[in-house]
Image (cartoon, rainbow, N blue to C red; front, side):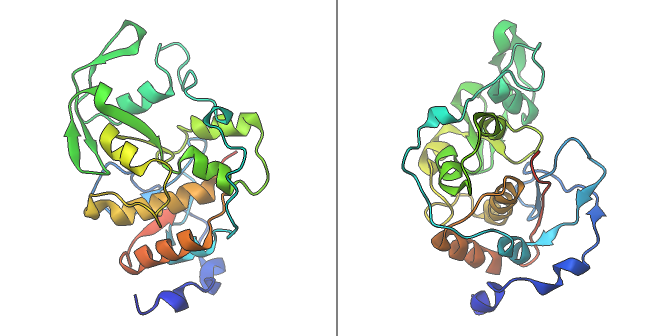
Length: 238
């Protein structure tokens, strides 16, 4: 942690980075440090990955504002990417992240299949025991909106499948443990996932132009000290 104070300074060399590179893998590999946040619109043209410290330096810092928050401000789940498949966003994420695909019956009823929950490294074999988590929880998003979002933008975040990282299928137990906590308050029990967790958290905030408070920023910088090779790539949300 000896470099923490120095690393908190803005990274002056970012302007020298090239503009584009290939996309990085999403959060399926629990051992991999990098995390990427990209849109589906331009899969072959994404921004170069930033070192985690430099990505943190791009986050605006502001006090949180929870007053007035209710979950219903963020409409979810909507009809998903395929309005004709009978599956809402939640079910589509579960299907996309399956290690072994479940059987799908009428009404998008899922049976069988298997998933690995990144937060606790648990294999789940019943879709009913999965939660689809908003990586940055909805209450945290509300806290961090720099100006109040429209209802349409809130719905877009709550159902964002254009990025592989905004939504993640995890065990219900791990998601309930996380609740609406930020990395200063909660980290996954799966220590091997901490670097990817930090990178994905930062990338999602950058994608959606969300601020962090000072405690959260310091926690992220502390994680970055332990993740020297971790990078973040993101595309701003439309």
